[in-house]
Image (cartoon, rainbow, N blue to C red):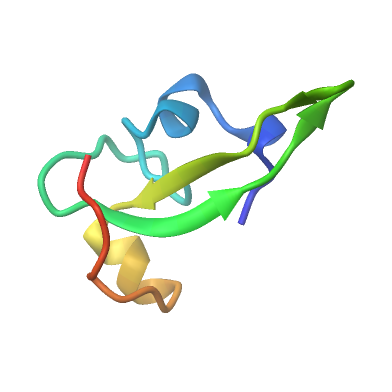
Length: 66
């Protein structure tokens, strides 16, 4: 999973798949948290995947939608 500092704004905000950058809608799957820091600022955030990437990368479809 990419580090939080490597995500686009859309990926970081939960609007795009963390793996392929596809726009997310209904059916997005929570795939956990990615971590990152800039100095003392914690940028860790929960990230989401499109249904296709969730299956490809071995994540179940239980989880949140965004």
